[in-house]
Structures are given as structure tokens and as C-alpha cells.
Image 1 (cartoon, rainbow, N blue to C red):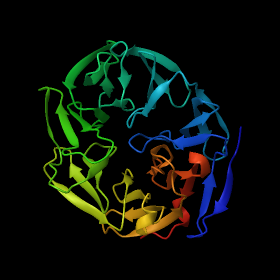
Image 2: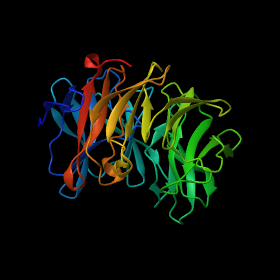
Image 3: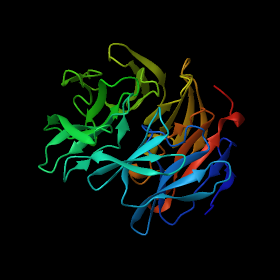
Image 4: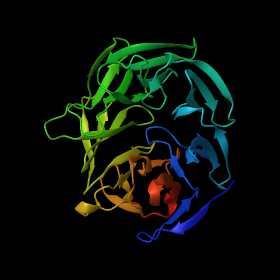
Length: 338
């Protein structure tokens, strides 16, 4: 299957590659996990069609795509450091070689629960997720692929979500109190050796903190101080910096070099905000608009831009009518660098 075509963005004049053209919703994975393989030859995305959801692998150079995982496999999360993705089927967790597609069962999660985040790996390869247990108490769960055993290491009455193991160590786990909006204190760190938690960025009255992502080396956590600021904090949460400020940012993702950030802005047309994908200079905060998008109908169609491994391609969702979206990329060799 191949649906690739190109078009010129009417606002920027840059060439956009559109890889999907389905009758349903085709969307890239969330920006807190990789989409591209380590050699940037392939990327993965989710296709929702005829009430079914499946994961496809796309050859970036040609647009050729093939089914990688059927709808039974969920919570896909790619490893920052190894050529694996991790998926769940029922209570079992599998590793998938992202080059060959080979699946291997590596363990089980607590019976009858559900993940509230994609699966995520720490530096040594421990698999983590935030979890809604069968008895309805939220938890953080770790699975050791060496033993196949999983363990509930933290429980909470708050709705826990967006769990991301730090790729720079085995000790630090970021998670959030998910309110589906603003939270009194959103970002938390769990320390695995001591089984303790503490706030990461301590919110003040009026702060709206959201949309977190580790850098690939685990040295920094990027997040939004919505709606105007992209922020970056050190792993320990002791030092913070405003990386960029604009009329509006909603999601952001850094490249691996630390020199560039891609971000989107949307859902504020009534305020005069535009729906756009931008490239931000991480040293100066200056930005260049890469593409213009339609207004998304739901959060599932948000652009959620992120980089490939080399940092020379931005992949994003392009919302279309009826609540659907398509997967697009822009190659940065054509872009004026801000």
C-alpha cells in the first residue's frame, strides 16, 4: 500500500509529504515516544478504519506501508536506546524488533487492568506504565524483561497518566495527575530505589502545566506552561528555563541535538490564534512557521509534532474534516532556520 503525495503549504510555501489518505483517522504516535526507527528508514503510525485500529510501518523514502501489528496490540511505545517497541496484548507485554517486526513475549502486567500511558523503557530496559488496576486504584507498574515479572510500586487515588521512564537512568519515573485539563500539581517524580514521590515543577496559582517529554538522553524534561511558554527542567527538577515564548504553544518536542524544538498551536481560533506547526531555535527562542493545519475536532487529531532521529524531519498529524487526520512530514533542509 502506498498513499504518498506532496503538496505546498499555502502559507509557508514549504513542501509537505502526506503519507496517508484513509477513510478513517491515521495518526502518528504521541510525541513522548519515537516514531522513527534508529536509522530513520521507517516510521510507525496508527490507522483507525472501519472501527478497527492497527499499527503500520512506513518506508520513509518511498511511502510504502505494511501492517505491523493488528488491533489486538496496544499502548505502543518505542525505546529511545534500543531497536525495540513495546506493546500490550491482553495482560501480556511483547517486545517488537522495529527493524524485523519480530515479536517476543517478555512478561505480564497485573491481571485485568488497563494502561493509562504507552509503555516506556528506562536506561537498562525496565518497562514502565501508569495503570488502572482491576480494583480501580491507579498505580505505577514496572516489568523486568529478564524475569517476566511485573510489580505495582506505587498506588494513588489520583488518576495517574503519561508515565515516562527517564531514558538516562533506572531510578527516575515521571508521571502526572491527569485531570483532562488544568491540575493543582500535575508533574510528579517517582524515585524507584526509595519508592517515594515528589512534585517536579511546583505549580503556583494560575500555572497551567502540561504535555511533558524527556529528551532522548534523559537529561531534561520539556513541558508547556500553557499557553505561552515552552519550558525545560533538569532531570532532578531543581533548575528550570523558559526556552521560548509565543502567542500560543500546546505541545512541543526537542530534537536529539538539543538545538531545535518543534511545537504546535491550535484550538484558539476564537482568540485569533492560528493552527500551525513551528520550528523553534532552542538557544534563542526564535521560531519559523513550518506548516498550517486545520482545526482539530478532538485531541486525537492534534498535530503532536516530533522529530526523526537525525533531527532533519518533523512528523505531524494534519487534521481533516469529520474528526479525522493524516500523517505528514516536512523535510527541514528546505526551511529557513530561525
